[in-house]
Length: 576
Image 1 (cartoon, rainbow, N blue to C red):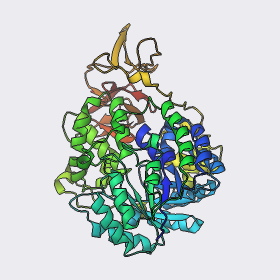
Image 2: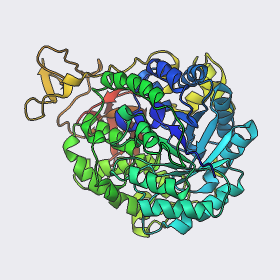
Image 3: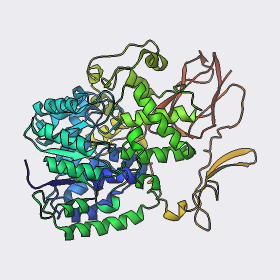
Image 4: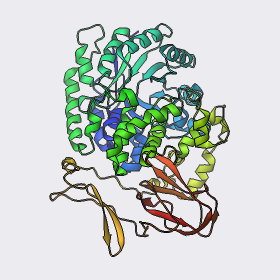
């Protein structure tokens, strides 16, 4: 066991994912990384998780370039990434050929440590990526997703760690993504693991419930080797405990991390300026201690994203209802740990259940259906026949490793990407295309523009003072306007696209029940459809939401195309 406590700093990844919805730009990370490199951290978590998605979706940045640029600055500190097993950095399983190429390329551009986990703690879904990490010669950190439920226990987690140890992990991480681990549980789990294995153990938690710092102290006393912390301007709330505080609290003890507090204060000063820059994104909900997390168990990053998603749907007033619905959906789905992608799967379905007036599972995302089919792996507990039939009817449920059913796709997708003129940097562009086929084409063509950072004063007025959205009718055409600020500041608005998408009541009209982007229009004008047939697939809240025909009939008109952004209430098409 290391006497000196080692520190993994998360400021460049999980901290800003948790507090500012993963919006930190690479240009701001570079000077920060340069100073961080002087400190002597065990590692810096700087990639993986939602950073890949956010880079191309919101920042118009190449995530591969980010690693390269950070590697130039972090000459003495290993770069660590969070890898979702067979899901990589996406929200579904990918074939083994894609997993192999992704891990190999990530290592080649600068990733030194791979923290590998599976959202269901199904080790079958971790084996391929773990094997590749060892083959390329990187550090393999196998992770367990800590959670509490009627089907989880300390002995069960210890057995999982023993299995990960047998697969040649270099270290183990207890990934407490929702900040649920209590001090006594941390002590018992660390002690039990240390009795069984002889490799370093890392504890990762979040301060959402206000307990993480106490649990860290208990883990340190029990002999944990590494803890994850964030620099204080990006710490606490839904993020990690503050780096400076942990280091200072152990000065002069047998677990002293031996890091220079003066250097840490230099890093803090840079982070403080960055926090000011991103203050318009920082939501008070993500900053505060929320003991309700002990009930709904959402991880830090998901809370800030859920707030953002509800705001997009003009439904932030439904946040408490969604929080109450999350544990119900989680129980229905067999108590999965709530970590990406299961946190998105459960969270988005909870949002849909609430937005549709409590008509639970009337609209089910494709991801929830795939989950129930077994395509994400084995749930911790069986899903009841009643829930299964409600979601997928009589469709079969698979029991094999999901990736065993996937054919290799890299070469096929590469040919398609080349034909579409998407490839400029070689295979890494192909990987980006495979991971995010809906948004990667516009990114790879250079069509996406970086999202404008809101400034603090845009959120100073309360909803009671001014409306935050309205509909405006001009010459019979309805525009949706989102009000971001008043009092002389610029007012940003979004209008209906050039192709007029009607609103209101149209006989046979099928409306969107959420804001989102049209991924696919399955039917064409004149198509004959049956009740329940798939008509359109929307992407909303990073999930695919199918729109089905409510009746038999014929498609007489279609008002949207793939790529169109629609608002709740827009008429998508007409079935007569």
